[in-house]
Length: 217
Image (cartoon, rainbow, N blue to C red; front, top):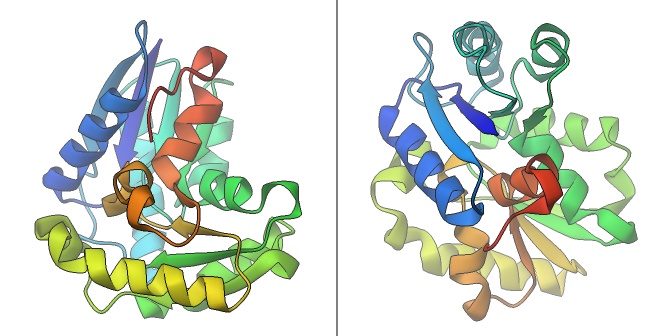
């Protein structure tokens, strides 16, 4: 099976990091390919960025008809509904939807650690659309932006772990690391975290890969 990771921003380094993380998570028989948005913003941190990214996602999926499934590689899931209609009936999943559903599975209370405080209303609306509002224990935004985290991820480990501990104190039972730069991070930071961690890419692959062939995370 070939799975496309469509990165809706124009930063190729983020595409590369998602592809590398996905390849480390899946077993044999799965080929991961990546695509970077041909136009739009270098990072999706506002609702306006998401609107442009919807068109970029459609373009990337249209250029990869050989893939048997696709991932919209951004927490805001730009163009996800349209992609599901246009991708020939093949499965398409988004980091946001998959991550939020996994975080709230079984009635579990969860918090989100993410980037871009301007996205708060969009995230809250998405949580409500998915029927998870009563399980949300809060959203914490890191001090840096998407590109800061992508370029120097180690600088934010302490801030993330502090946010996880604060979420525990608010009654959360798990924390979702929301956004493409966090791909594969749930496994990396779990041993130091106060709560179970999830990230969107790991959650997405767990439902998309045949047989649930995710081997790490």
